[in-house]
Structures are given as C-alpha cells and as structure tokens.
Amino acid sequence: MKEDLRAVREIDRKYRRRNRRKALRRKWPVLLTAVLLPLLAAVCFFVYEKLAKPRAVMPAADTAVIRILNVGQGDAMLIRTAQHSVLIDAGDRDHGRTLVQMLRDAGVQRLDCIVNSHPHSDHIGGLPAVLEAFPADEICLPVMPEQLIPTGTVFQTVLDLAAEKQIPVHTPECGEKRQFDGLTAEFLCVDNTDFENLNDCSLGVRLEYGNVSLLSAGDLEADGETAFADAELLRPANILKVSHHGAVKSSLISFLEAVSPETAVISCGAFNDYGHPALKTLKRLHDAGCAVYRTDLDGTVCIVTDGNQYTVSCGKVNP
View 1 (cartoon, one colour):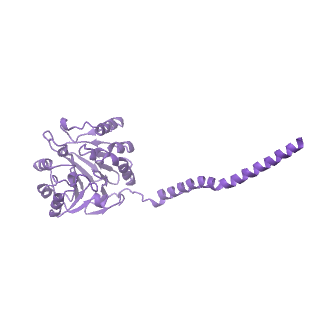
View 2 (cartoon, one colour):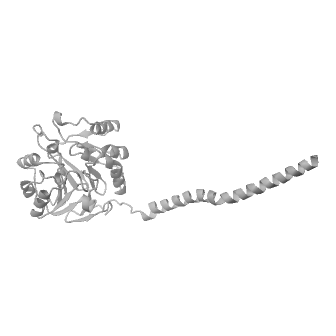
View 3 (cartoon, rainbow, N blue to C red):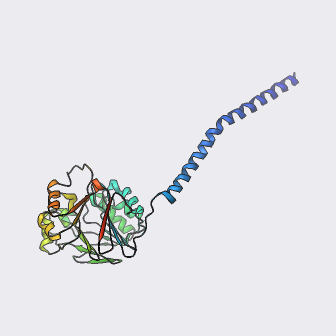
C-alpha cells in the first residue's frame, strides 16, 4: 500500500514538473516582451536624444538670435547671444510647460534677464514654470498705478518665487539699458499714473544689434502709443513685435509712421476668441509696407542677425 502511494506521488510530481515546464514555455514570449520592449524603447529614445533630435547651439560671437515663440494667444520672445539669454514675456499658464521646453530646445540654461511687459495672464502666466525650471539674474516689471496692480495668484506667485530664489525684481527707468554681447536692450516707459488700462502701462524694450533694431511694446493701445510718441520714445526700427496681438486699437498709423518698420511679427493664437489680428490692423501694416509674420500661421518666428542684415525663418525653434 505504501509503495503504491509513493508511486502515485512520484507520478504526481512528474506531472506537476511537466506542467510547470509547459507553463514556463508559454510565458517566455510574454516575459521577453515585458523585458525587451521597454529596453528597446529606452534605446530608441537615447538614439533620438543623442543623434536624431536637433541640438541647439549657442549663437556665434557676432550673431544675435531673436525668437518670437509660438505660445498661442500670448506673448513670449527669446533673445540669445553667444553668452546671454533674455526672455520678454512668458505666455499664459497653459503654455508654461511648452515654453520651458522651447527654451530648453533653444539651448537656454539660465536667463540673464526676464522682462514682463505687463502682468496680464497671457504675458505672465507661464513665468512661474520658467522660474521653477531656470535660474535667473533679474526680473523687470513696469511701474503700475496701485489700482491696476493684479490681485490674482499668478502675479503673486511670481513675486513669491522671485523672493524664494533671491531674484531681484526691478522697475527700470526710461532709457535704462542692458548690454548682452554687443546687443543693447533699452527700456522705454512713461508716467503711467493716469492710465486706466494695464495694457497702456506696458514696459517697452528696444533691441539694437549693430544696425539692426527691434521694438517690442507689450500690449500698448492708442493712449500708450500716443504717450510714447509725445515722450519722443519712438524711433525707426527694422522690426516691430506688434503690440496687443494685432488688436484694432494698437499699431495706429501715427505709431507706424514713427517706427517705420519693414518687418512686423504678430504673436496670436489660431482661431482665438478676440479676432486677433484685426483686419484693420493688418491693412495698416500692409499700407506701411511691412512684411507680416504671424505665429498662428507661421509658428515660431526666428530672426538671425549679424548686425548688418537679418534673416527671418518660421516654424522651428532652432534656426
């Protein structure tokens, strides 16, 4: 009886061993797939990052690169020289992570200066993400009447992050300048005390690299443009970053006559709810003889200059 029981148990063990081997053979493809697919994906990602993905390079010593970045219905402009990076505005909060990736793709590691033309959400919303991702030496803000200072969380978050990271927050005076490898950034502003519209408090920046110049004036509308003209701040510039996304109350004829740009770039979102850019504004730009580029149609607009001439390309972060 005991011998029969032992024989039965031995048969049962052999049966179980054979079934385990069969089960293992059935599982091998699954196990190999579970191990090999992630490994293959990691190898492909490594190859893409190291070989296939375009790598940003620093501009040459005698070159400046200005990118009006495609951040939807907002403004963000990156200026790079051989040793410096400057950001003017940062789009809205929904594009914060996208903006950070754009800056990384452009080779940015730190920002020498961040300029916020005015703290409306479509110009400052992405700035907290930028401050979390990159060290910065300075933040420049416009002077604003107390009643127009934003009470929303984004503006306060920017101030809190600046304090936490010990980044100086500065309100430049009109005519104050910064030098970046031969590129001059001059701040333009007027007495904003009587303005009732935060757009008209926008801090303007005139960029000059050799004989090539660009004017960016945030979201200036008619009153702000008139104030700039009355203060004799408007001088001819090769390139205009069009104010307020091409709104009908911006880029008036008198303003365009004073600036006399040959190239105009409009930052706006595709099919935006505001109808930007306005047809009347486009007509005024056309009548002024401007070649017009739009981020909603052309993507990121990249301007490369050696100080004597400049080229414009579209659709890529890296020229």
